[in-house]
Amino acid sequence: MSRWAMVKKSARNPRREGSLSRERIVEASIALLDDGGEDGLTFRALSERLATGAGAIYWHVPNKGELLTAACDAIIARTMNAVAAGASPETTLRDVALGLFDAIDAHPWVGSALMRSPGQLPMVRIIERIGQQVRRLGVQEKAQWAAVGTLLNYILGVGGQNAANGQLARAQEIDRSDFLGSVATAWSALDPGDYPFTRSLADKLRSHDDREDFLAGLDLILSGIRNALPD
Image 1: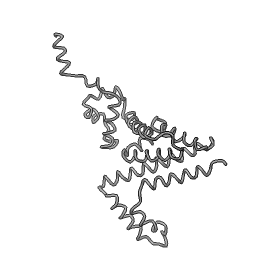
Image 2 (image 1 turned 135 degrees about the vertical axis):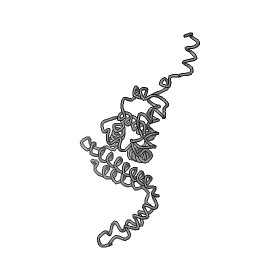
Image 3 (image 1 turned 90 degrees about the horizontal axis):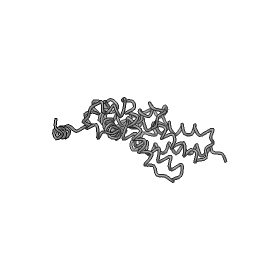
Image 4 (image 1 turned 30 degrees about the vertical axis):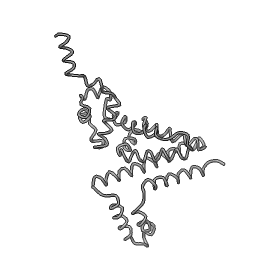
């Protein structure tokens, strides 16, 4: 074969793998996860989206578990990097918490991915950022892990539950205001003798803001941490 023929053949059949990178794979994985959840992330679907062979993807990422962790880490890294530096520890913790709340709401699969990779980089990024602020607050060393664990469990627990509620509503094509209205109506009909507190919340439930409620709970935890600081 002549040199010219080889050049022509190469031009007709470019090696797509040459332009493939781990970053492109991760971004495509995030898109698939956002569209179809964890079940939507397959190497076949990823190959179709990237217009390449599965072997080229396996060269960069060996299995679905690592791919899911990498996609989760990309979201968490962006969230942590978006938090402004130089603020007070309380403000930073609020920004971190709200950033994670919004990230999990936008990418519901992130919550479950974090729970399944407790010792890996996505969770480590969160623990490190929260832990640094807990130290800045002046929490004694022996109490630091308890403070970090409490904040971590609250942020991921409430954030994950909020995302799950949103997914359920979308799957059942339920409007949020209609859902809250129906629950409020049911609570209003409760026996005031048996359920005085729950019944009193009925009207507030119709217009409550999930993010505001989330931050209010976070402030209660931060207040408890501050009150436990040594004089």
